[in-house]
Length: 100
Image 1 (cartoon, rainbow, N blue to C red):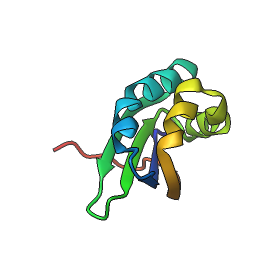
Image 2 (image 1 turned 90 degrees about the vertical axis):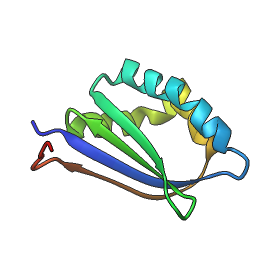
Image 3 (image 1 turned 30 degrees about the horizontal axis):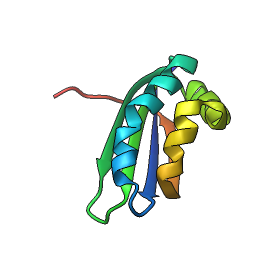
């Protein structure tokens, strides 16, 4: 089974950026507790003020299962309150990886 990258681009609510960062560790911990297939999560703020969240999963099926249950994960439900708008959400299996 191939690992998967899930890439979510979103905008934070005005005045919620500190909460978005502060609540992230609890959100990731809660998601990992229910879905241990989450390997890594990286959040980047882009030049236009939007955010790019890149999550690495053991499989696309595990990413999809976590998304299906996301509303019932307390840390995620609290964290997503800081999100104004999801601009895109894509997931795909990793087909090649090179270490530099």
